[in-house]
Length: 257
Image 1 (cartoon, rainbow, N blue to C red):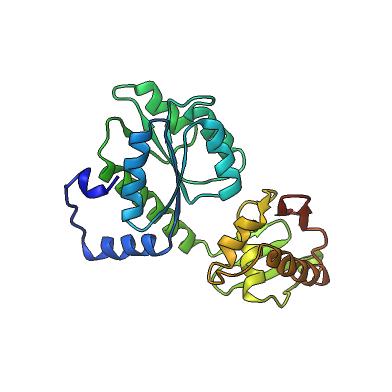
Image 2: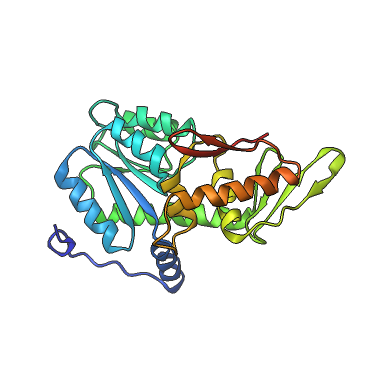
């Protein structure tokens, strides 16, 4: 369904907002659209793709949880009334392992749903029936807030690892304030930094490949094994033994020791 056939309202943006808007779009963020009504899902999909986002859809709560676990989307648009698991249940499960931004869609006039969305950890909500332009605009606003927060905090800590996102370096903290810095390649750093954001989460090879080696379109998933093996050896030499674990049949996780 073409977005031009769905809505024709234009949105003006100031220079700063345009800059942030294009930054979000160029980052090619992945949006997980969780909606059991196909027509609504198609409309949202079309509008997000028009703005430069990648999208993936889920028609029920269980598929949404699976997609979130395997794909680590940058933002979730989550309907409340879903089959199998409702939106509040899905949100609670997401919050147990990740701080992924969530924009919830609630029914008109249902204050209980709105309060529930915020109480369970949603970043914002929209009320059905909604304007798809508003949904995209609210999602962009959330992503800008997240990006602003990340730019202020350049250090990610996961146990003994201190990841500096600005200098692209990692420090292994030891006893008595001693530390060492492993000499990592850029790809090795990206892999560790990506996993350090949510320690103990299991990342598939495909997910790590997509997140950390996006420029190499011909890379194989087994390429990740090679990079992880080298990174693990360097971390162990620096004193971080056992922080990178392989999970049979799936991929890897970073343990915050």
